Image (cartoon, rainbow, N blue to C red; front, side, top):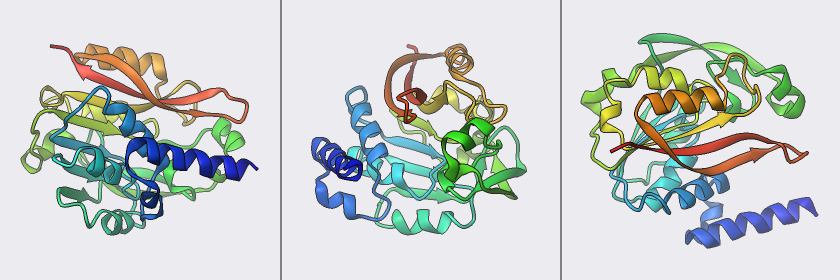
Length: 245
């Protein structure tokens, strides 16, 4: 019965968003990304540039192409075996730009933990807590990936306002922001996932991230998504911030 309820919830999300049930059948279709962006649109009616850091297979980019069709999308995915899926799944998006690299606070190469469950891949190792709660994240291998600072890519990105920097990098968000110090004045909104418990070793938790982005000149708008454990504990939340005027 739980599978039936999940299918029903998925259909409800796509119907409420206006995307329609047939969108669920498309490559890269994501209920979570659709729900997050549907919620974001209540606060951000128009976006002209979206920097999609941690693009995975293009789930967020595809949903963003529906909700914000006038936006130029810049999607970054470091995993060499996932990047071709990102390219394939987003090939019909007319305003997509894809990059096979990570973003961080350095240029060169980065030790990266490629997880058997690709969504859990990160520059940080999966914690014992997450392995216990989500067993499919237990297996990973260490690889080297290309990494650059967003500040050193400004010539490749057109920061047309309003602009959004979205980060889904599994605990590495603070490093991405450190490498974007000169770019942030051109960013109007931040959207990132933060944890309330240690899902990755060494990741900054909610309090630290909240204070950090406030110091960068952004103010909290609203939570737009969340992840719960089977015991209904909120583990992670997608938070939306905007630049203070």
